[in-house]
Structures are given as C-alpha cells and as structure tokens.
Length: 171
Image 1 (cartoon, rainbow, N blue to C red):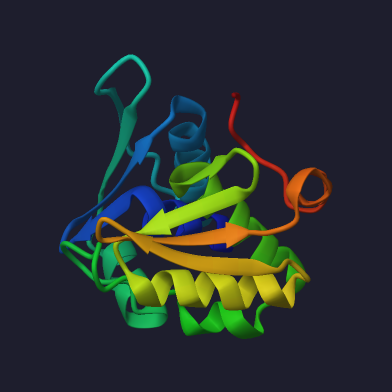
Image 2 (cartoon, helix red, strand yellow):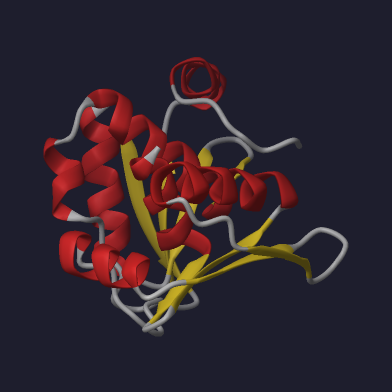
C-alpha cells in the first residue's frame, strides 16, 4: 500500500508542511484516501473539483514530514526535480508493481504503447530502471519540455502489463 500511495503522490500529489493532497480521477483519489486511512489513520477530505477530477486533502504535519525524511519526497513544487525514492530500487517486485501501477494510472496513457510523462528527466530515468527490473523494455523521449518513458512491445506488452501490473482506473 505504501508504494502505491507514493506513486499517487509523486504523480498527482503535493506535500506542504502541514498537509498532503492528491488530485485526479475519483477512483484513484478514493484509493489514495483508503490507503492513507489504513496506513496513517487519517481520512482526509474529498472534494470534487470538476466532473472528472477530485482532490484529497489530508491536514497533518506527520505524513509530509515522514514522506520527506524517509523517502525524499520534496515539500512544495516538485515537477522538475521529482525522482523515485531510492528504497524502490531494492523493494520487492510487488512493491515496484504497486508503484508503477499508481504512477501510470495518474501520469500515463495507453495507445500503441504505454507512456508515462513527467517534467523531471530523473523521474523518467528512474521509472525506466524500475520497469527494466520488471522485465519491460523502455524508450525515452523529450518533447516540448516533457519527458516520456515508453514501455515498448505493442499489444503483447500491453496485455503483459495488464496481467502483471494492472490498473485501478475505471476507464
């Protein structure tokens, strides 16, 4: 669960000194809320910001401090400097899959391949390393200041991803 929550926060979340928030599709934000409650005993407040976007706001000083001190997640704006927590590189396969699933659910897309994106080059390099450890081949691309990590292999790889990693998204 913690790896999954880290994926949501790194992709579509934000930490401040006294709060944590995650924004995105309702089913993903609700999942982040359930994990936060399970791990930290904090439920937080869900707000509908648009028809397809919700926001979880958890007022707490402990969670941001823990995530910053333990996993190096930046407090404040992180888009250009975010990177994977170093603990994920030696985590179990299941923890890696949970992180990848959450990250791709938030900042990924499926077309002729699976693609994740970030403003941070380091984040995409780190994500590629985790995917390689899970036996997925990747490519890297930069376009208009956005960095992309593509999982290569077409339909067979998309099916492998669905079976081995999956998605919490409803669509």
